[in-house]
Image (tube, rainbow, N blue to C red; front, top):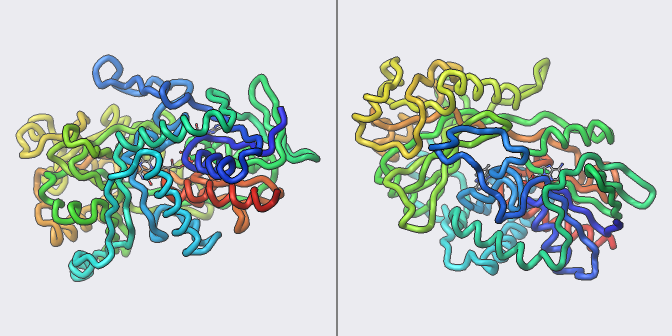
Length: 456
Ligand SMILES: Cc1cc2nc3c(=O)[nH]c(=O)nc-3n(C[C@H](O)[C@H](O)[C@H](O)COP(=O)(O)OP(=O)(O)OC[C@H]3O[C@@H](n4cnc5c(N)ncnc54)[C@H](O)[C@@H]3O)c2cc1C
């Protein structure tokens, strides 16, 4: 079949490309190829009872399918150039923010209305943080919550399904350059298009590498973030989370001058397992619905590592640390901060006697056997620094889950239109290594759609 535009991947990048294309030019023939399932068919079999760990489904319902990696996420759309990607380096800061606000308006129209937009503007915490050598990054945060995020995706799909041709459970195997544009090959079908948008996210990173290699598209290695997820009573951070919801705080350690940062804060949320290519790491969720909220708040503390020469495989480094934790704990390890400081492992008895109930069933153990000393020292230093703005953070009972790893794709060489060296071949979202978040990935989708329309 011949299309004007083929989009590979139905995550936020792909969805917002499709949305903008058919909104502005309904006559365009657009197809979306997605390796994973339709939204209503996405179910992870891990239920904590019958199925306790990853069984390696052919298509991972957490990372793949309509909605992409963010479908069951907390749905935090951070409107900022300070984190979440470097889209602004390609399209300018103002345009990047305008696009993120545009995406926010669409999310509100499709079911997000009534959700809260938090902001760091004018907050007193900025000064309080600086006084303790902590740096609060600027952002507006739309918190949809896992439940509303799903509804928004459902509504977007219902609107798009009659205007765009969706092919689910159809991974694209190769993309080839032709005289008329591009040829997209799947297992038993071949399609062609004039322009092609590749938006394959984190899960498509290996495939993206192959495409870049085959088509000689230049790339460079990206970083990996490694650390732990902290869980404590919600009261400890309530003064910050009530006002800001998500506070991104950066600390430069005294010992090594490494940067440690908070990431993905979930007030009254739950710690969850995450499965990346069969490796179990940790993450966090929270809900808008008060009935689903817990008494704890969780957030990650991460240290960025970037390798260049002779070792370039930053993601491989992160993976092997995560594998080590899986080897020792059979999955995620949990440790009380007090046990870590005293140089002893946590046991089930010590966890049971703590004044906090863990929201994730993890194996009590010793994270100092997993994380390199330099990273562990930085995390401990930051916990003491945070204790000054949120007293109670360095409590003995504070729980640390490990490991949390944020993998990034290698960065693909593209121009200001997010078009690679082949005219009409766009590489966007997390698969391009340029974005690492819902808002940046979605904004990149709108940006390429507008460029495609301008090129018609
Ligand atoms: C558990 C979790 C929670 C998160 N929470 C947040 C949050 O609260 N806020 C935030 O900003 N970010 C969050 N993120 C990150 C966010 O989800 C991503 O940044 C975002 O989804 C990236 O969008 P994308 O469209 O670039 O890629 P993705 O969402 O990864 O979508 C890519 C899609 O492409 C498909 N695909 C891959 N290869 C192929 C192929 N060869 N052929 C066809 N299809 C293919 C995949 O199946 C996938 O569905 C979270 C991520 C996870 C995993």
